[in-house]
Structures are given as C-alpha cells and as structure tokens.
Image 1 (tube, helix red, strand yellow):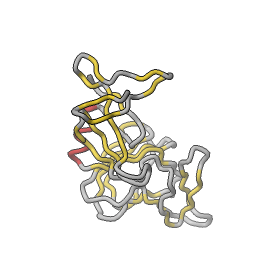
Image 2 (cartoon, helix red, strand yellow):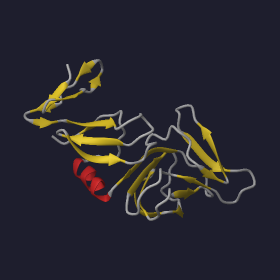
Image 3 (tube, helix red, strand yellow):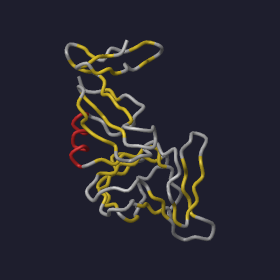
Image 4 (cartoon, one colour):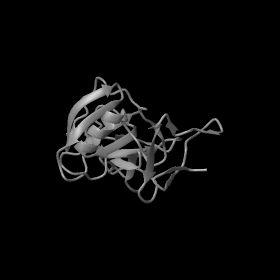
Length: 189
C-alpha cells in the first residue's frame, strides 16, 4: 500500500525486501523524488512533506547519455556512464558537462576520477569548491551549456545536478547533495 499524504500517493522505499515506513513520530523520514516526464530525459524533483523543494534541471543526471564533445571522444562504460578523453593528436578538448542552464544556476558534478589536484577549467562555469576529492561545485556563468577541459586527463561524470541557487540552499538544509527521479534520499527526521 502506498504512503498517502494529503490524498497524494507516494511509493515507500524497499530495503532487503521490506517496505520502510516513511513517517515516525510525526516526522517524514524519506524525501520523495520523481521524474517530471521521461526518466533520464527530463527534469526531476525533490519533495519533502509533499512540497517540491528542488528541481534538478539537468536532464541527464546519471550521465547515461553521451554529452556533446569538442576535440574529444566519448566512450560508454559497462555501467552506462561515459568517459571523455582527448581525440588522438588533440592538445585540448572539452565536453558539455551539463544541459544548458541559466546564469547563476549551481552545478555540482561527481566524477569517478580523483580531481582534488586538478584545475578543471572550461567555459561557462566558475568553480566554487571541491567538497571531496571527486566533486566540483560551481556557478554557471553563460546561457549555453558549460564545458569542462579534459586536457589533463579523461573524466567520467557519475552524478550531475543543476539547480537554482535557492534550490541548492534548500537541498543543503535537508542534507541532500544530489538526486534524480529514481532514488530516495534519507531526510533529517
């Protein structure tokens, strides 16, 4: 039986064959995510207590579709993600690291590779921080799609999120750093 909140039906997360309760002592313990249209081809939303708190505007958050490249190659991995590397003979190359965004959107990308000592460079993104050795957070500063430079080595993006600044602030308040429409995030209860 689905979880019902204000007459809206929500699926409860399944763990080791058992449905988890989403409410304990009046606190909702799971944040609800869903696609707004076609999975992995549209935006997805993060909701708490039935209210949308953030929308992932990137339509390829799990990076299972190849992104556009310049002087680079895209090779699909066995897990469905893509690795971007320089074309043979190229000394510089980029890939579009997110779908087109608005100036001021926050972009957070987690890579397979350790990027802690790399200057990623590129166009359309101003780096703000590297919260861990595999993740970059930046602000989009062009209206087109931002790119990252791969001259210093191949990159495999695993998780991408592009949200407005206010949505990013709301996510941080909930302790969430990434979501797509297929996963449940454990909330603070």
